[in-house]
Amino acid sequence: MEKRTLRITLTLILLTSIGCNSNENSRVAELATQQLKRQADQNRRMSELQQEVASGSRELVEADANARQEMVTLQREMQTERNEIGHQRDQLEAERREIVDSRNRDPIIAAAITRVAFVVVSLLPLLICWLLLQQKVEPADKYEITELLLEDLDSAEPRLMPSATSKPDKRRLTDLPHSPDTPPTEEEN
Image (cartoon, rainbow, N blue to C red; front, side, top):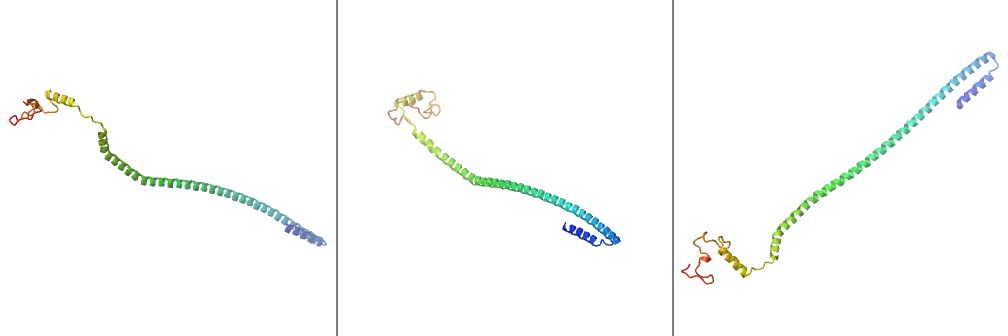
């Protein structure tokens, strides 16, 4: 801008100093006018160029701002994805540890169950014996035993003593000529 005013001022000074000769003055005036027109045209072009540069700069700044905004958005998305991937990795690691613990724990539990079952099976006969020993068995009365034996002797199919028809060479108590309290003699055998 300063150059332009300096040129205009110089042109005006030149025109005023040469003003003595009319032919020359008109020629100088014409040159000055042409120079002023060229200067004005150059100034106008410079102004347009500066406006275009300013417009381009504004567009560049806007494009840069948009690019930065997109970059910030992409970085946020990437950070979110990284956090999600990290969280998923932590979950996978926890599941892996749980599986490893389960693989280590399951054989121990199976062995413990086997041992407990073995102990229970081993103690079961002892428990049955203990229960049998704890039951009260009252001895049978002489009267009840006598009744049972007499019923067996009189029955057609005795339960306690074999029948006479099954083994004829053996004698039954009823076949004996003497009483059961006296021992048999050799002749009777």
